[in-house]
Length: 310
Ligand code: CP
Ligand code: NVA
View: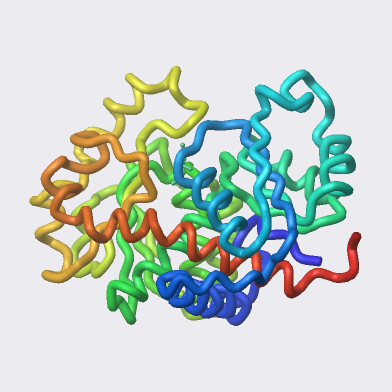
């Protein structure tokens, strides 16, 4: 049985299989052909942090696959009152067929997975946001980007950047990361990504100059400077990231038809200017919609690769 906690746990072929499934399911959905790949299955969705996209896309996704989603906010379940993660896992995984969790430390989702009888999907931890970046890859393909040269500008020590590192390393494309000093990616994750990149041929570079990173890129992306849980650092972070906004000047250095992606929510005139956000709104909201389809691909793939666990 496989869990979907980080892209590092999958081969390139497995990730491409999920994308292919997602493409097929998206096409079927657009024809209103809701194939019940997961008929009568229940997806437990545990949220310890806020969410718009992750909640709506997983809940709608499992419904479109013939199953049902249970929204379990940590404010409402005993986890929020101190019931241990491993007990929560041992209870919930006896009742549902798959679990999605959004939480803080990555070790918490690993603990849940170790104690779960059913596949567990990472819906964001402090370290990784793998369902989002796989969606971004799906969206890049739909936007016609065949040979990605991706520039990520902004916070390096966050879940999106770390997931981009793993995705570039696994799928073997070029990724340039531009972060201010003091906000670089986690050293251990970088080491692991560079080790995987050697095998796949991915080219991953780190800069502190956003211009160098964006020059000639065909995909430019960023994320909030203040991730969930970092609210008390807001003022200091906004100062530290001065000069890292993706604006028209910076985008003009990318390829002429470069796309801009943002996982959302976006903070206009901080990590991205209002002008660039609105200019690329079609790509950004296609990316948001694709969460629904990519995650259906991930869920069906995990379902097809589970042993007899119940
Ligand atoms: N991008 C993303 O995961 O959005 P939510 O926080 O709204 O789920
Ligand atoms: N890095 C952001 C992503 C939000 C989807 C956060 O963790 O808040």
